[in-house]
Length: 340
Image (tube, rainbow, N blue to C red; front, side, top):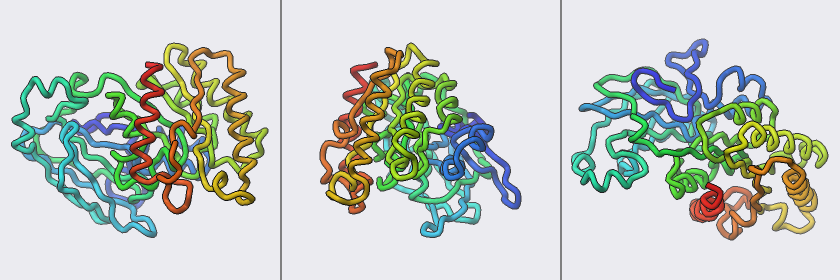
């Protein structure tokens, strides 16, 4: 969406909230959000993968604020100029915080022949906002300075959409650019739509219909879903997962849709603990749902072929650390590139 001559990438709406100045960024339209499970309704208001994009003419100032989490009193915004990461970061707090950006001189001088080969044009300022585990809800207040939204030729020419759990949302990564879905998009030369839903990726029908109806992606992955183990029976999971993959693939016959089985996790690594057999049962149900689907554009990728080294997990043995996220991006990009 575009507002104030800024492209709010991966944000569907700016919402007025009673008792708050500014407008809350959320990743799906309100009509979709309110049809999701209660936890997912909250998660879609965390700005994982949301970027404020614009091309400045001189200095531009943005004013933002957050609702702090219990364990995060500030959120760290990182700035990229096209693909180039700015070293300076910005801490956004509960009070309106103004950050100032202007085109770095060296970046402005990049050879036009080099620019043509970059995923993003370097003149595009990308203010990336942190996901749920690195900060709170983000509110946009206003902007000053001359700017315009990016033009299509300044952005990637294809888009990768990802739905899944906190692993997709990027819980343990130190920055949004280090999530496995961001790393995948980079290697595909693609833009990213991140619809990861920490702890609440329940294959809601409203999310399936939302993804199916979007026309802004070229390939989609549906990582389904460790969140449902222990909360839903295997039979319930099969029904929900089958509905999701068939809805998305059926409405988009010319675009590849990839279901990903549950990534290796603590249930697999601790024999006799935490429903390890049930976790494998869920993988089997997803394999069967894909195999029985009538849609030729629906594909299956094993989570163990993406997360190939469990040594890259963090100590909860569920969430990949930075190194594992990067390796996952490399592995998944190879799978998706073959389909594209």
